[in-house]
Image 1 (cartoon, rainbow, N blue to C red):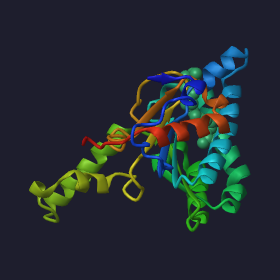
Image 2 (image 1 turned 30 degrees about the horizontal axis):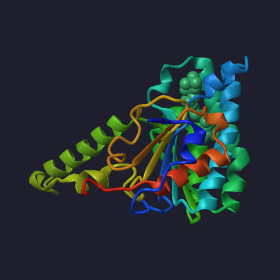
Image 3 (image 1 turned 120 degrees about the vertical axis):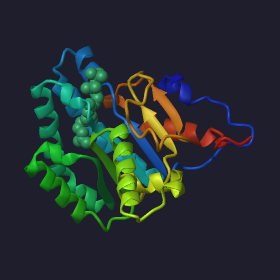
Length: 251
Ligand code: FPP
């Protein structure tokens, strides 16, 4: 289902009032920067720049609305297929925003966590990211998880590999490996369950993002391009979540 921004406004409440709650963990596939720029006759990098501004707003809204964890898909392991110019524009933007926004993250009580394999971005940016993670480690208001060079299948395969190695070393019994054991080896093991996953731009797929974690998440697909995802759009998505009834496979 694709919801136009206004379609989220008038949905009737679920019979029992729905979850009625703020999602603890929200993840976003930020899509549509390129199309946003193309509509304006601008280069793709202008879309990414506007997208980075939308990231700042989304962090503010998440913190203000009491979301505990906001996970953003900033660079997928498939994004390396883009042109060298676009990759360096994206990494340049990340470096710029990291430097500019670190003080704000600190002031706003935002803790940064990385998932994926950020080391692929080179030792300088990886070290900057690592320092930002360390500096914000004690913040408690919101955890901002940035997925960088992330792929969900690779994450699950790595978790399976760790369990296999542990079994081979005699540290665990293969017969006892269950969903919880695998979940504990994922990079998200320390985070609350994913409650809500939003994708912008009208594409209706998960694109190798949080496949395991999204098992029971509510999914919202919006036709808004990411740079236009503002406070109102995020607020409507959160309100829509609050009206949905989550059954976790039961009745
Ligand atoms: C998708 O749009 C977006 C990305 C691949 C990257 C997301 C990056 C940002 C929002 C900017 C920088 C990030 C941070 C964390 C500061 P697209 O290029 O796939 O758009 P298209 O599908 O319309 O071409």
